[in-house]
Image 1 (cartoon, rainbow, N blue to C red):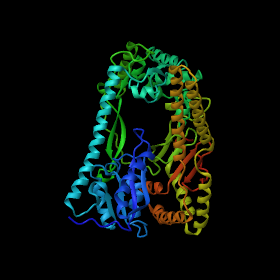
Image 2: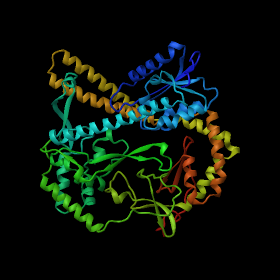
Image 3: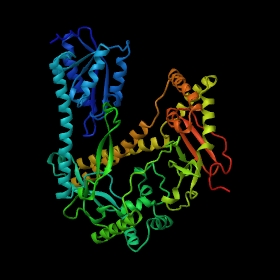
Length: 570
């Protein structure tokens, strides 16, 4: 075995990771990992000069998909990186599965030592024993995550089936959260934690009963949605705007009616495991990129249903089963045989990049009269609303837009206009970012909930009823968590600020794509448009397409001639 080099005068980068999924304290975790790393290198004179610590990222993600770990890999390539070695305080936090085997060759290639406490110093890439130790810790990390997942899922299934316990998540439309008594865990109970349950929402519960009653009387999904919208009854996203700021909330949708009719929790039973999280390879041709998590529906026989009633039912079990039978019968009549997955060899250059300016939904590709179009059929899914005047179908023909779009790209990113474009990008960065009104509202809600918590604790110290005050505290904590999550989301939406040199390097790289874009066929332009970061919005009333290339400023493409964008125009 090769002797461990002395770390004397070595400058170290500290690497670590913490996941906040199980409510760990990121600062505490960072501190103990760093303390362990310093205990390894300090006795021989090593010192930490920089750190790469990821917060909130799963260990199952490969290094290239963790921001700080990816930054460390990028720093290894820099001869002026400022450190000679990397020290890790807890390898099970950083390496998962075979990640060590994929990462160590990069360290060895750039001549950067990797230090871990488990081998007492630097990992010797030529040592079979060191390689075995590190591989074992990667396997232990993967096994620990799998074991926790199985244990948690088994416990939740038991709580739902035997206790009918509410297991968290957003309450379904028609219900709201209520206090269900002290937590059965004595330690959590002493901390003031309480169980929650569902109780009927006095405003929304009658709407649920109306939907089932009308459907069983023969009304269709769209007719029910139209009636509710016409009667000015807020749809679920409008009923709870704080949790649905991304939806317009103008009208009821057929999909919302269907989701309500399919939800068995309205019968009073707790139902869990309707969906599952599957880990799917990001790229089957490159397994090292790891997995992404996708939500998928489980078959009804895999659902976990409470043995007895867990909350007050809004409908009878008989009405629910009758509604399911009617839905299944209609579905079988519409699709009598199982269809193969729909495939198409048609390519849409702006797939996923074009939105309808009236409803802000993404427009779908549609081949019509021998030409590719983009269409929005909002009224086919949502009831008509006075708040939104939307045509039955909005069409936009692709070949009426692409020439003007390509011309704009060629002009804006041309070498002669480079200086002006850089200035526009810098100006756009100054004004882009989170909505200041929404940001202020989230901060105000956070301060309000914190003040409520302080007053409730004072009331408890003054001799208030513990059960009543604990309920108030739990509600304030829930509001505080919601406000904090919203604030984090708004902050995360802020685009990174680029320097002038970074913008110029970006434009130089994109400039090489401009000539390729002009010569490419529409079928091959899609990845190039994505490289430019395009976002397009079509205003059907004004026949104007607004094009935005982030972080560049917005601009308008010239008006589209009547008839070119709508295949049905006369």
